[in-house]
Length: 135
Image 1: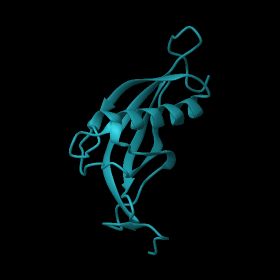
Image 2: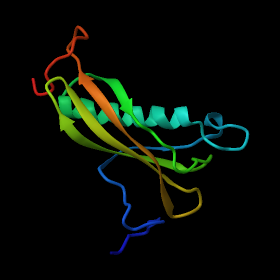
Image 3: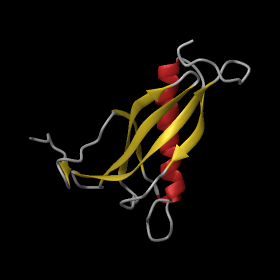
Image 4: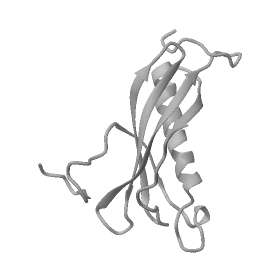
């Protein structure tokens, strides 16, 4: 398998899903050692889940739950954060998205998976009440 201009540590572990959000990790989001706060990473993942779920539901969605997030690698200032989403399950008023967070290291073509989680999103009507995803 050939990877075009992207180097990953393990070719069997490539990003899954649609690239939904890309952003740059900045100094304001880091501790004094230059590691990006986990809460900032989670917020980017939540934003990507919101984008993907709103597109699928064709309307407003909110986060109901986040399931198991384990950080495998640090995110450093200057890294490009890439969030991939997949709609894994659609229920009546909610859906579950698989969300993967990868980084492209600054001044490098190396990509690493940072973390992943399942986000449960609920579709809402104009009054803020749950509504059918496909309705």
